[in-house]
Amino acid sequence: MSVQIWLLPCLLLLTATVLAFPLSAYLASIMDSTFTPPFFLKTPEKKLDCGPQTWKQYALSILCFNTLLFITGYLILALQPWLPLNPDHKTLLSPTTLFSTVAAFMTNTDLQHYAGEAHLSIGSQIFFGFTCMFLSAATGLSAMTAMTRALRGDASCGNFFVDVWRVVVYLFVPLSLVIAVIFIQQGSPMTFTDHLTVSSLETGQPLRIAIGPVAAFESIKLLGTNGGGFFNMNAAHPFENPTALSNLLNTLSMMLIPFAVVLMYGRMLKRVRHSFVLFAIMLTLMSACIAWTVYFDTLQPNPAATAHDARQYGQFTLPAQSALPITQEAGNLEGKELRFGASAGTTYAAITAGTGSGAINAEMDSLNPLAALGPLTALWLNCIFGGDGIGMINMLVFIILGIFIAGMMVGRTPEYLGKKIGIPEVKLAILALLVHPLLILISLGLFSVMPWGRDAISNPGAHGLTQMLYQFSSASANNGSAFDGLNVVYGFYNNALPAAAAIPWDIATGLVMIFSRYLPLIAPLALAALLGAKKSVPNGPGTLRDDSLTFALLMIGIIVIIGALLYLPVATLGPVAEHIGPQPFGG
Image (tube, rainbow, N blue to C red; front, top):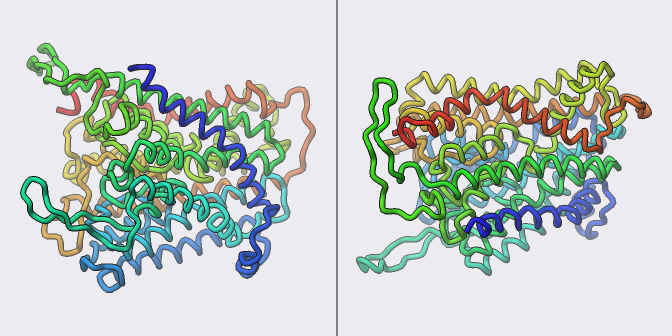
């Protein structure tokens, strides 16, 4: 059994690595304008080209474009009751849910404080969901491309609107079409009809089963590392993920572009060996997160179902507990979709956090306490491949800080790509780095002492803290997965019984998603422009080569140490405290 459990993660990592090489070459050709598009696509691209842009103009274009995307998305959802493709006459979502939802899709987070099939019409899913999934993912990949051009000293960072066009039309559309066809063949619906009416086998009464253009939604959801589900159950739903083959394709699709982007970075810089080292660093960290999650969940029993002797915790006595009549040879099976195998849920959980996707095919809230540290760590580091383009941007921040620390330790001016790293670059790197933990920890601290947190958690104690911690970690990492035990859904504006703390959670997560998207995206772009404008200096005997084993070990150490310093205390208060007890899963 233990050997079979490791087959799926090994197969996925190997396949994604192999496919990353040809896909990275294609990506580099698209973004470096060496790709020749069909003649009928050249004219629209030329119309979008308003000229070369500096990093400031590029950043301003990102902000203006995403502001327009926010306004358009808000209007579409606000007009849902009157727009076409709404045969069920779904009404308006609450105002705060509208804000949270638009912020989530605009920032490539897709955190859902709603149930897709219950609250959004087919028209909203198409005109709002599809559009944002393509464009928000293209924004991140375009920003990473601009950063790469700036680092190599180009006269401009390119043109944002042309870059978005290339990513959407030459990459996402053809890949999404191929994958959507496979999903249709496997059993995912693809229709403008919003439901089927069937007879119940138990009662004979008619049942309404929600359907829609699921296959198309699913393909860009995964390729764009968006993650939001057409259905509330996401990839655990049989229409989103019908078979074991579709599950394999689901997981692989999340990995394809994040893996390829790292190698594209090296191709565009003409430093392929350097990108191999970065790829190896990320692959090592990803493998560690997968192994940790699988080991502590798939290879360990659910402590809530095992026998416990009577135990004393200070003045409290925990009575003895008999084991439930459940076979746990395949580990913790609570919340797992067993159609895909014992390790499919935990592998998916680690990969969805590591690639910034946020799609899920099992219940994250049901992970064993220590197993939850796997995806949480991936969210905190936010550079283990990460979302499309974003993981590489975050890795640059760690590279600058790592080389700076190493340079100061040996008394030598730090250099990267032959350019000396100065105080302005370090300040920008620190700014980009600290936004993420500050948004997570300040928000968590506020909600822990306010009724908003207590009213939302479904478990007391350490597990409730972990639920809140994961929500803010996912929002800040622009991931979108969640511990679904957190009760944060308001629903329609006329809902008589919304979740008690839905409004503050909508507002807080919406703001966290926005600030954690654009500050860490623009600061590295400025950093790259400053560094790229400097003159190159030749390598000397004291230069730390960026394509060496020493560099790889240094970066892994820096990433792990910085992550531990920032998040170890809160990890101890949450998952570790829950694992220790006194009661499993918070009581």
